[in-house]
Image (cartoon, rainbow, N blue to C red; front, side, top):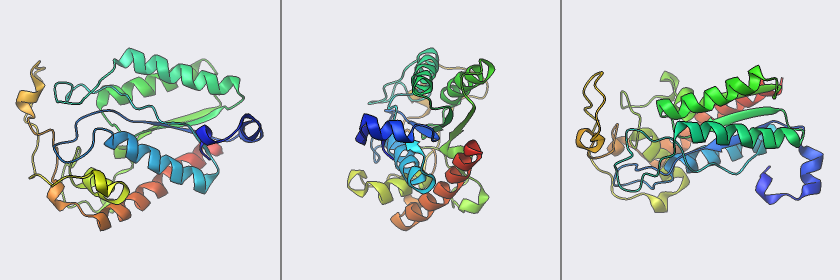
Length: 232
């Protein structure tokens, strides 16, 4: 159930349910995918999971922590501290409305981004603010049974391009070639775009709409299991 589309009386009747909060980013996804790819995939999966589990689905948080792509055109990053505070404040707002079970589901899987969401969740658990909370990214749901052709596919490659071909085909441009970043091991660098000019981590040319539909329903099944676990 979309929270943004219901009235206060409808919310009052349903507020004991699990709340799925989708998180994404406004971030480059190569020359072929839209900046809101992470948000779109997270929100669509959350909506589908909400329909199957009767969970409430919050409006998505469009902004995230984008460390490696912040120099690329279109990427709008926020700090980890802001994301952490924002996540906690949103959840506390729901708690005041007598919601106590949450799934924070992120289409953006950056290390620092996910660490901020997990730290926010850990704080709320330690403070006994919530009854149960799960923090999961879309890449956490990926395993060998998904049957990706591309090894180490991660960003704007086979998975994300296929999903967008299924969800928003009108937003997808001509597929570029397979590519990967070449950041120096262990060394932190300032000019990140120099080491990752295309913003692609995988093989978009291996993508298809048919794969996107299969990937979507596989990931949906995994997300539903997370929601059901939080329900218990």
